[in-house]
Image 1 (cartoon, rainbow, N blue to C red):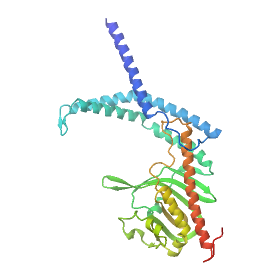
Image 2: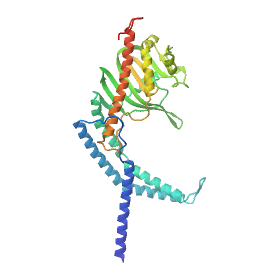
Image 3: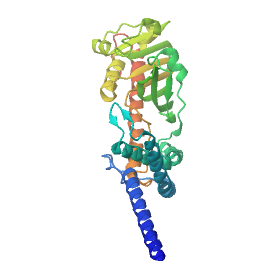
Image 4: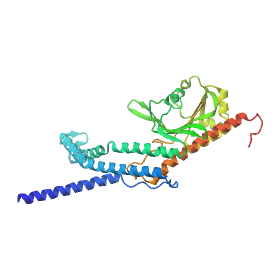
Length: 360
């Protein structure tokens, strides 16, 4: 009789383990499931070297998934038991929501199980993301004659010249840099935040393009949206003067402050203002800073890493992810082209004698 009971218990235990494994696989399948639908851009096909790297990364991804599943079998029940044990401390107590009962107990158990699953994933996902960036993004950037590196934004310059309102925390993940059309170039994502009491508010979420142009301008010129500094005072622009703009459409959308009026007007040609308004239509209201040969333009395209690698939602070899990353580079290089064209238009305007027609 005892042997039969032990056999029955062993079968029940085996069935419970199998059911737990299936639940975990289902949970992982939801979180680490099939890739999203392909984007509309034509699929990007990697060369043999990049394809080999993707195969290696897919092996890493599969190993990470297996480790997560193994961890989850251990940590989800532990988390659920801890949630159950904690709930017993509150059993029968009163709160403004009523008596602590069965529904509250189940919530503690579920939260504990989810925390256990979170502990199972801890570290593995971020390690995979970083490895993907380090192996894939340099190859994609090299296709444009550029390099990828962890972002190194010139935050001191942004603070010194008030390109953005007051901020006290910055996050930047990725940067594409190198020479483009014969000019030093850097493109990086940037998220800026300000802490006010217990609240953390976003000041800027987007992408910054930094160029070193062939010609230099005297002093500093800042172009900012009219709405950007609505609650700020003029002291933010110490040593900078407000520049009167003759283009009413541009003046309605932007304010300009500069340390040298003549230099600012050399930059703010009709062609510059027209193209800048086009950028505003395409990307949201941009901001710009020009100092000597350095030119920055900030595009508020939204929060998030400039080149986010795939999560476990898609195989490392998925063409959809490569296409998205490649298309990101193409998109922002189009922005760089527009910035260079702004400078070339301004130089052409400056070199054209007063009253003479610009060369075609």
